[in-house]
Amino acid sequence: MIFTHTANYYKKEVEGLVNKEHEAGRMIEYKKEYILWHIRGRNGLPPASSPKEKAIWQKPLDRENK
Image 1 (tube, rainbow, N blue to C red):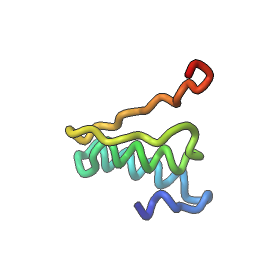
Image 2 (cartoon, one colour):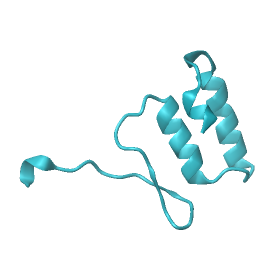
Image 3 (cartoon, rainbow, N blue to C red):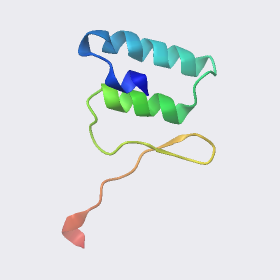
């Protein structure tokens, strides 16, 4: 979770490190996607974790049709 508070100066380096750790099997997909979502500007809803530690991307609610 420390990486979610990365200074802008280090974001590219952290992104590479997070991808490398995921590819090596030392980080689950959900944690990777959550960190990347956060350092890329938190656009949209954050990913949720599945029982198999995969990232699930949520769709925003369509409030106009309710």
